[in-house]
Length: 151
Image (tube, rainbow, N blue to C red):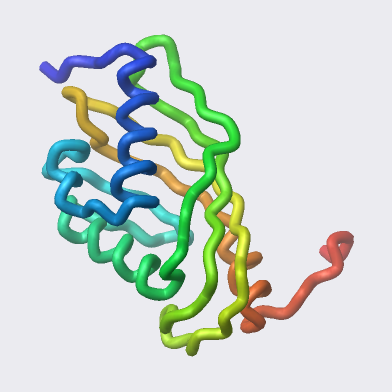
């Protein structure tokens, strides 16, 4: 049976991922932080990464397209058991590499999002990410701007 860590340990684990892997590009640390069968849902609807290797490819794709990409934690909290950690964050970076066939624009972007991580046996087992992907596309000029009151 899987063990559930404390909320303090789980929050620290999520912060280690962000500090060392997402911001620090230390991909070699992923096996110590992630379960082998890790699953990421998102950031776009209907997309998933299965396994640490596939998730690393996703991260590298974003880091290639936005070479200075960093995440800033706005709010982080956990349930009482430490099984789930929720983070409100903002990703910031410069679109200076190819991104999904979109040539570099050298535009600095700020993309807000929310991530919920599930921790199992002291490792990140699953993540659900909802990011304002449309805003990202607007900022790099490939999606139309919409009036905030338009429905």
